Image 1 (tube, protein in one colour):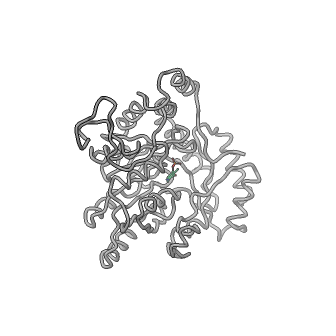
Image 2 (tube, rainbow, N blue to C red):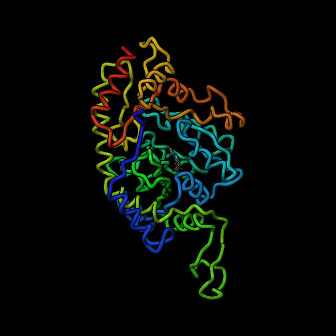
Image 3 (cartoon, rainbow, N blue to C red):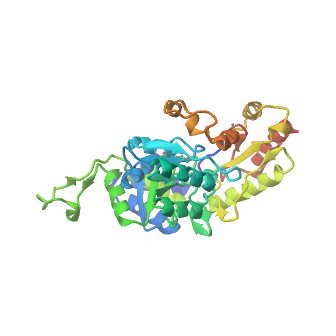
Length: 385
Ligand SMILES: *Cc1c(COP(=O)(O)O)cnc(C)c1O
């Protein structure tokens, strides 16, 4: 089966990990700070906190921003469940904002309409989590302007988007948000097996997230409530977790970072080829906003079902039967049973549900050959014409 996404592991990556295995530190050594510094410098952020997953990064980002019981977190329904679950971890309530029909990202107009209503009922969100779906940045200037007007904080879920740009600047530089989160799961743009990172320009938020990553414990006398008892002394000053990234993961991340720009460029070349190969088929290929240079984690097409004598599911299943590992990103979060229990209903977010009824993620990853891509395109053509 051709996978929809997969990692690229080179000999240099393997050597970097083996180097750590032979070294003094498997965790809490020099490699995690090196990885953090490398990513922070690359994207232009002041602080970076590496953790064991993007899910953990979203959790500590929410906590650092003070999200708790009685608060609301808003995100998009077209995302992985983690973008919403992080609010529930903190005891907050979650709501959704419908998507833009062209970018499939959170729609700033729908956000504004919902904010106007929420202001009347006193239910304004404390945190909004825009997700850069497929790697394409959201309309961050508009969302940021609304945050100034309505007083919410912004966490960019950039799990798909490391290496991408918004208005010619790297995603993650924090110009339009408080915190940005990256994922390093193997299907994402670069990998550390499991892993994630939270970036911010705010020293206080960075400090808070660093504490929460490791049990809420500090060894810094300046942060302690009293003088140190001696050289062994540490203090727990908050309730944190063990969300640490290992040295092995960080070494892999450092090694992968050397190829980040190359990976994104190859994804763009593949996307451009798909655009051409699929141009005459009854599908909508991804529209790219002129302000965006997408990370292109995903290449999502929408079937024009009125022009196809098959259902969405039939096309999807036939592709899988041909060995083409298509996928669907994502099932609208509010339709998950866990969220339906909270009172969300089908039709609450019609653009998101319309998207779900037509979307298919075609395989895209840097090592994909043009021949494999031709096979996918021919497979799709055989079903649609
Ligand atoms: C992958 C992903 C996550 C979670 O990432 P992990 O590193 O697997 O925890 C969160 N949000 C989005 C949009 C994702 O694609």
